[in-house]
Length: 354
Ligand code: ADP
Image 1 (cartoon, helix red, strand yellow):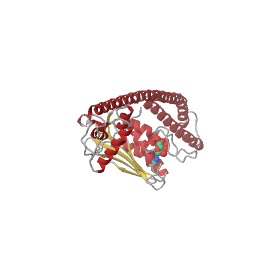
Image 2 (cartoon, protein in one colour):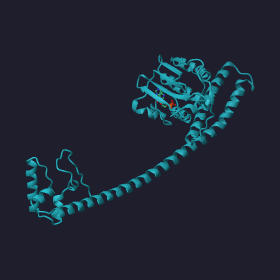
Image 3 (cartoon, helix red, strand yellow):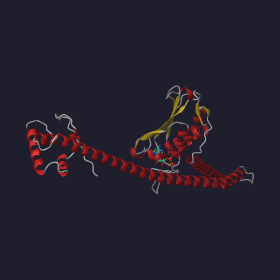
Image 4 (tube, helix red, strand yellow):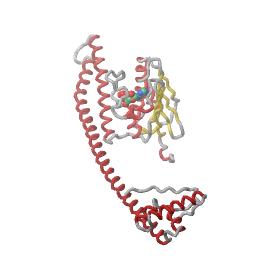
């Protein structure tokens, strides 16, 4: 049964009576045999006349004024209609509730399948990564024996070739480590070893590591890191990795001649904010959230200009979130990007009031 929408005109001068709550009262009275079609026409004409004179008049009142219906019958008909409307409303509510329950069940099932799939993916990634690590350990071990000339003297050419192989094995190792970290995070098994961390020391190591990369790409590297920063409560290894990842991306996505800045600044007594800003290619506004999705790369073309797996930012977000913080991005396409996140100063957790 369809429901009629009843609009009550706020300017109406007629006092509010139950009749205003029911639609198409005239038709209903004719159907029930309380009045004839002719009576209805007369009453409608009378109502029109009254309205034309500026006197707002409802149909039921017109019928009473013309002695075509008595008040008792009118009240009875209005009450009947209100009960019918209420029943229809209850039916509609029941139907809606049932639909909501059905849809919720469907969504729960879809969600269950999705998390099963994602669990399978994480398990697969974890298994493959562990399988890859074992042979790589052998490769690295023998490379080490060769480069240290434990297995015989080497000429310059051989030394160079081995150095290239060692660097490649190092890259492979860090890729496998990232995959393992990703699968741990995806299974909710990332654990943090929290302790007071000296960000001055951590960033010095990161800077030393990033300088050559920036120089190779002719990108200017700047730092805004005051001495004697307060220590933060963090997992040193993971936070260093996250900062390095942001810096790597900033250098990678900034064309030659551009600038990348790492700032580590106390914001309040309890927070230190880490910011990596670049003057690179930027991220389109509608794709900002996408960059945190695992395996998502904005330039997914076959001729990808930038290397990488699309796991870096997903892991940065997981690590920062595991610290109870949040990574924020501001970016403008063609102008550059800025990624930042705060960390709690060590020993202040209990002082924070929400
Ligand atoms: P990867 O760098 O391995 O592709 P990430 O997860 O680190 O993976 O980044 C995902 C995507 O986000 C990148 O492929 C790139 O499209 C975009 N992105 C990340 N950092 C920046 C940046 N500083 N400037 C522009 N785009 C970026």
